[in-house]
Image (cartoon, rainbow over all chains, first blue to last red; front, side, top):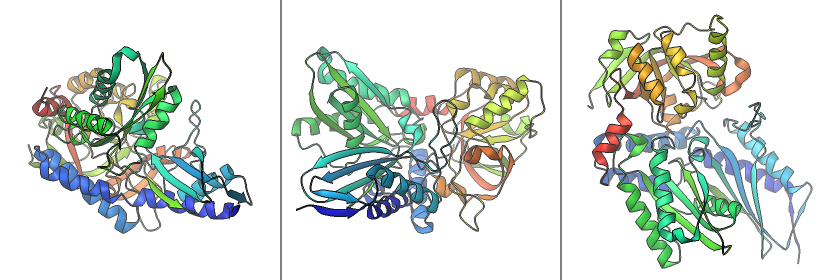
Length: 280
Length: 185
C-alpha cells in the first residue's frame, strides 16, 4: 500500500526544476509575446516585446538565466497520503535541492536576513507549501519568484459590502499604482476569500496556471476577462513605456470566507513567469 | 523617437542635455554597477566626508545584481533592478557629478527635480532581459565591496548597451507621457 520515495530523488528533481525554470520560459508565455506583438499599438512596445522574445531564445540556447533575479525558490508539493519518504527530512531535502540547483545552475542567490540584509549564501530557505492529497505520488512545482513584482503585490481585507466590484477596483488600482515597477507585461494572480494568509496563497497558486486557462466557473472566468480588459485600458504597456499590452493574463481563485470578511490578495508576476513541475 | 543615439561614457552635460524621453541610446565605454547595499555604503561615505572608491564624475551607474558568470563568460545574466529603492541615495551622487542612472521603474519627484537641476538623465533598460543585455557587456571586474557578492560594485565595459531615456534634463517622464498616450479611461 505504502510507496517509498527516497529523499535523494526529491533533491534531484527539485535541483533540476530550479535550473529548468530559470533557463526555459514556458511556451505559453512565448506564444503570448507573439500575440502581443501582433496586437500592440505602440512601436516602442513592440520593440520591447521582441527583445523579451529574443532574450528567452538566448536563455534557452545558451543555458543562461532568463532574468538575473532568479527569485526566491517557491516550492509547491502535493504529497500522496500513501507515500513514505525515506533517508532524510522532507524540508531538508527540498532545501538541499534548491542549494544544488542555484549553485550548479549559476543562478543568483537572493535570500537574505530581512534586517541585517546578510545573504544566506545558497538561496535557502525555500518557500515551501505542502499539501497532502490522495494517491502514492508526489507532484513538485518550483516557481522562482522575483522581488520586483513581488514587492508590488498586496493583501487587503475589504468590507463584504464592497463585493465583486470592490475586488475588481482593488486589483485594477494595484496594477495602475505599480506602473512600470513589476516589469510589465505582467500576469495577475488574485485570491478572493479564505483568511488573510489563505487569500495570498490562492493568489500565488493562481499564477501557476497556463496562460489562457480560465477559471472553471464561467462567472469567475468572465470576471478574469473583464479585469484584463480594464488593465489593458490603463495604457501602461511593456516596461511602462506606454502601450496596450500591460498584462498577459488575469487568474482569479475564490474560496468561502468568514461572514465578516472579504479578503483579497493580488500577486503580481513579471513576464519572466517561471514555473516547472514534475511528478515522482 | 526611434532614432538610436550612440554615446560614450563618461558623459558630459552637453551629451545629456540633448536627450529627450523616449530616445533610444546605445551606450559605449564604462558603466559602474551598484544597487541597494552599495548605494548605502557610498551614501554613508559622502555623509562622513570620505573619499568614494570610484570617481563618479560624468559616470553612469547601472542598477544590477548579475548572476554568477559561467566559465569563459565575463558576466552572467544582467538586467536592471527596480530603481525606486535607490531614490534616497541618488540626489547626493547626482550633485557630485553622476550623469546617468540605468534601471527600471519610477523615480521619486525629488530625484527627477535633482536630475533637472544638475543635468543628469535616467535610462530604462528592459527588465527581465538579463540574458540579452549580458551580450553587450564585454568585460566585468569588481572594483569595490567584493563582500556584497552580486551587489558588489563592478566596472563594466559595454558595447552598444541598449537603453531608453525615461527622465530627461527638462523634467519630462516617459512613464507619464507613454501612459497618457495609450490610456483609454
